[in-house]
Image (cartoon, rainbow, N blue to C red; front, side, top):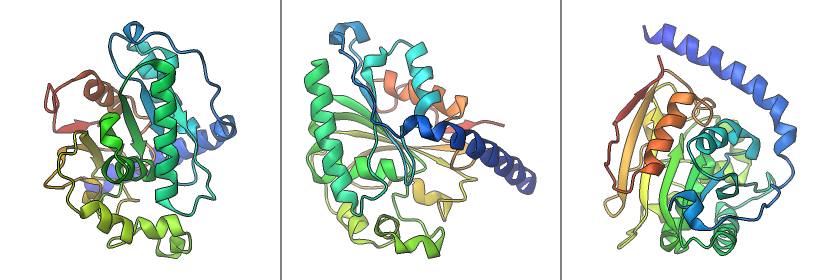
Amino acid sequence: MRVIALFKATALELAILACHLVLYPTGVAPERRRPAPPPAVAGGRPPVVLLHGFIDNRSVFVPLRRSLARSGWPLQHLESLNYSPLTCDLRTAAALLGRHVEDVCARTGHPEVDVVGHSLGGLIARYYVQRLGGDRRVRTLVTLGTPHAGTAFAPLAGAHSLVRQMRPGSSVLRELDEPAPRCRTRFVSFWSDLDQVMVPAETACLRHPDLITENVRVTGIGHLALPVHPAVAASVRQVLESEEPTAGMADSVSVA
């Protein structure tokens, strides 16, 4: 049964990759900033900042943005951030995210944001929250297929410094393992049992004694499907709509 599930997931990954290659050029340019409505227009929900993964751009979040917009988030409260593929240090990208979050808060008048990060994007956001004081701004951080414990995928790709920082035992991951007392952000990590980029798959689970964490297992899809699959989008919406760590949350999502 697992072989069949893996075959289906791989076929879906290839289809998503083909579609994403078509959409990719639309996300190269920075997002055009729209005048933001008052916080009350969004029903009190914080703005959502979306952060893509390695060698990607904001176009990966087109389906999730549409899903959130249909559920009541104003488009002006859905922000995507591109960081350069030439970035050589995760810490630099985390500092860029911090400046972007401050700008979002200033423009929307909301003191907090929620962040959704795919793959490396989740790790960048986690570094901002834990190491750069971002917990005062980020209410909830949702990560999708993020190598919280490091991934051993594609050893030859380690020539890029960002990939090396995602390796088990890297200096960045050792920093993130350090104590984080009084960190206020809620972390929700979605991980897939068929994710072939996270090696092993459980590396996308977040376990830290000082953090408020929830790990949600996704069955039936791979790494590229996590930010675009409707079932995952519905669960992400549920997380962002809830105010308490375990309010209505399921511990698994099945897409079979």
